[in-house]
Length: 563
Image 1 (spheres, one colour):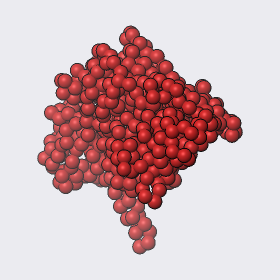
Image 2: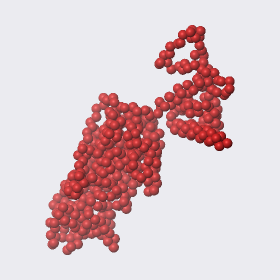
Image 3: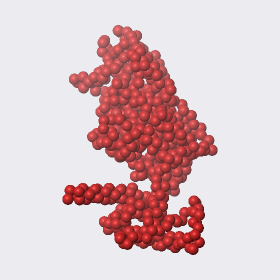
Image 4: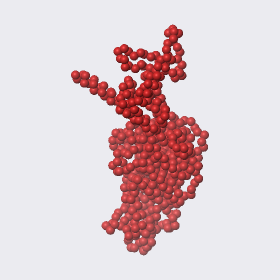
């Protein structure tokens, strides 16, 4: 009895395992089996291969790959009968002749007709199917596999002329020994770069250093770095500032509501201009001057740029079907006529970090991974991007999930991990942050990890309104002003996160929420994600906007959804 029970359990396990595979294959292809249809499928000897034939028949017929199809028992019977008819015709084709008995017939390797010999059903098992049906099913099953993603290395160069230039890439410039002298040089570089921008403002042309303030002086014009922020018992802001000569505390009264709101947006380590009144030892702020950005002139643009980030290939929550639709669209094979026209004009595709989900990024991440090897994740990414048409240049920057160092600025993803991507002829790699010129349109690419610090530091900021965060970073002219918090910053000899040049487009990601706004003529674009809500996001109540792709088409913002 025990032996019989073990055999029963084994057979039951195998049945359920096969059953799950059949249902999963149907689900992936948008096919819903009725209970009757399911029973009829499971009656077939090789259910998995038979359902492949069903999929081929349905998806190459009246239905597209995007349609959701409900299949009943009658449809299964019809396809079975059609297969049996095919078998009968194959029997006639390969019926042996007298000459065949004497001399074996040569088989053409390119011949598609199946010429296997049919074995009759054994007398012991009347229900046994002829082996020819298995060969036909295997043949159609191969066609199903052909529709899946294959690794297509795009090694063919295109004739398209690109006016492409990398303006800023810190991949090979980055240097730090971790010593205190590096940290001093880093903050000195930040202060000097931002002071140079601030000094162009009329109010700050004759700014003073802290050490130059005289006791009898009543009016102050200073360029300072925020050192510490406190709130007094009366609710005023008392902020300690510094420059390279000394420190000074300045009070911002809550009675001046507009100024107080600006003071609440100040964060540690940012550089600003301050106009204040001095009465004895007390300094009271009158104006906060951000480095800011002036309005830029509109540039003509006769092509399209697509913006992606946070694809997270390798994650269990990666939206593969939606990403396949996106690739079909960019290849002009999916969407409405107008959408395909937009795709036809696309010349550049920018991926601003987290193209893969990475490995060991956070505790117990392996439980949420479909691919648990970082190189295999990049190989999978290459399979997807290898399908993108060759006349589109793809620019890839790293994010905090990629195989680059964690501290910003992050060098480009190294070839040792992403060799398959490096083999694609139309792919360019760049650091995070990085700046590229695309036919004269300057794009600042930054993954956006500093958003986490801004949201924690300023009560009115949120991940959902990351367009406001992007505007704030432009005003501060720094991509990650807060040092020593969630965003790890490398204490370089030079601060590469200062926004020296005002871009035409500012592209970010990281927070998985698509946003857009135009600020002083600059396009602010967060490209969202191709991943459903993560466990981390559930904890913080963050609702992502998956599979929503922003496109800058001939200077106008477009928003496409693939889910």
